[in-house]
Image (cartoon, rainbow, N blue to C red; front, side, top):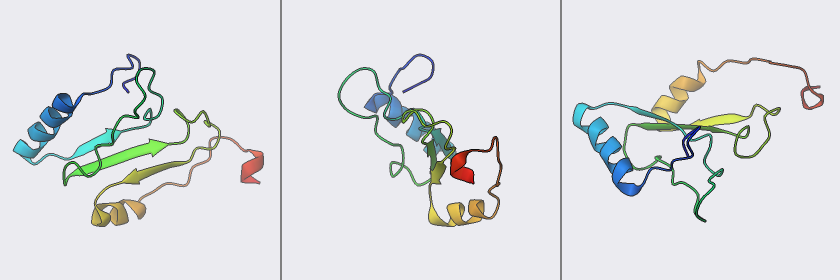
Length: 101
């Protein structure tokens, strides 16, 4: 769902985004950090991953799961791109915690 409106893209909206990207060969970087925090309906918002060959999705434990202090996140996408991105990840500390000791 979108922040702050809570809007969840329907299948037609998702298809339009994918087709627009495909038409120009663009990559989609999809922030799915609020997946699982839907306020209407019973289904979780489907991931963009797997719907187009040039999609990278990012997510974390901080928003939908209410665990902001853990700072655990991930990216999922084409294997070669993720392997390249792994070489550039950053080790950063925002604050010390008992889990970090």
